[in-house]
Image 1: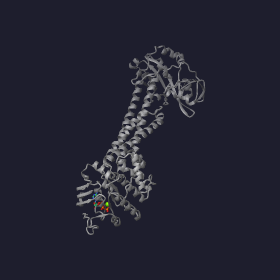
Image 2 (image 1 turned 90 degrees about the vertical axis):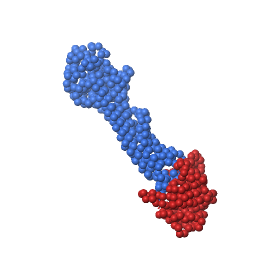
Image 3 (image 1 turned 90 degrees about the horizontal axis):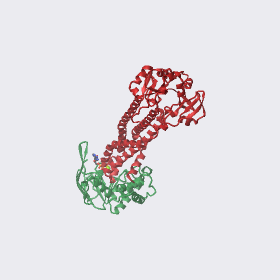
Image 4 (image 1 turned 45 degrees about the horizontal axis):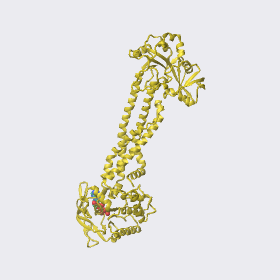
Length: 406
Length: 231
Ligand SMILES: Nc1ncnc2c1ncn2[C@@H]1O[C@H](COP(=O)(O)OP(=O)(O)OP(=O)(O)O)[C@@H](O)[C@H]1O
Ligand SMILES: [Mg+2]
């Protein structure tokens, strides 16, 4: 017999009570782990997306929300394509590059993807009206994406379709994101039927780790035709010169296109940061709740356990156990409970994050082993401190009264 | 030698003092076999707990082998219990989630023996009590008589010099009860002091001396003192 064995046997004998006592702490740790896990990967995804986004100004439909900026173009709202000409023909200084897009949902093999219509460079330039605006004759480099603090730029090899200028894209050609290609098993030069139209796959895009991986890119006008919505756009991405942005480029565009919402990356990042802050303060609230509710659950369980085992404790004392032994027995049990709660909370929370991450935040989530340290610390500290008073009351039990109750 | 020196015991029950013993003295010699009898509420259990170092008297001393046990700090008193005293209870008080073997291991574990030693000693004591085939059974999987034998084995495991039993045959049938008394005689012959609280005159008679509490009329043994408790 050893202390560990003794405590395990007792725990095992009354496992149902243990489960109820641990429930609150288990759920609390589960939620915290899941939330931390999703927040971490959503921040990472934002960083990647920001890096991927070649533009630093987005023109969006007015009612679009910015909580989830990288899906801001798939909220099902549009504005007329004519806005592009308005922009191109205006005298606004500092607009370096324009790329109009329309995104619509498509279903293939029962899986949802986003079909994004883009305008290849050749066509953009071919439009005499726009050519006149001289957009592409401006010096490049003026409108590079501002460095966002805390975000490390990615390896240029992995830069994305949004950054690349697609030179040519025929009406019946598509570019396929890596995930789509993987899911559907298509390669370059395959044929694929989308919304009743047959396309040939011009290329499979390299893996980027962003939402672009689950997108299919086609010619803007083809997508407009397939969507049946006419000449509309869901976003215009603009590369604006930084110095012009600070001189009020955004409000000038807004003035020119009053029916749209013009946002800069900075604003979007702010919104995202706010969301993440909200998530972490929510985590704090949850920690406070499990400290209270979880602690109360454990303390309640422990007091009931001490009461139930009065006779056993009296007997152990008669057999020569000192009060230190009784105290150790209950605190050891508290540590075990904390470990069990922490580990199972971590496992459940990770599972929850893996399941919910793709659904609620649209991102892939991987397990984070570092969170187990947090889970264990929170859980063990709560279990031990909530058990201290019950354990002390057990150590101070008068063995005579417990034995006379027979 | 186990000695009571001028012991008084007063319980405080809801702020009303209840005196059970008032200045009693008695000396038990090593190897004595003593039964304690008396009506319910006369203080038999109280006396046994005081003898076993479990309950301090209100005044007076309990001296075991020259040590006044209630003058020792609590940890040393626990050590004293562990080494010298074996308790047996009417309801056995086996730990319900441990097997027979593990129950008998408990005092040895508390005394700090290694797991191997614990198992060896516990097994041999249980075999001595005829339970060699029931080592892995939990108390709920044993008959009442077998449970009492496990309790006796547990008491004997740490080789106590003083054995204190509170109505050890109270819940047993006459035959099993007789077997248990034989066992007490046997361990008494090994030189241990045995003190048994009992209601059963047959059991009381098998002891060498009888202490009668709470009733002044008929002492069993002219030599033994008779204490009247205030009820
Ligand atoms: N913890 C306590 N607080 C107050 N009074 C107590 C306490 N324990 C015992 N008593 C009282 O002390 C007296 C002696 O009790 P004790 O348990 O020693 O009697 P007993 O002789 O063992 O009786 P029984 O044969 O019924 O077991 C009783 O009157 C009882 O009510
Ligand atoms: Mg009694």
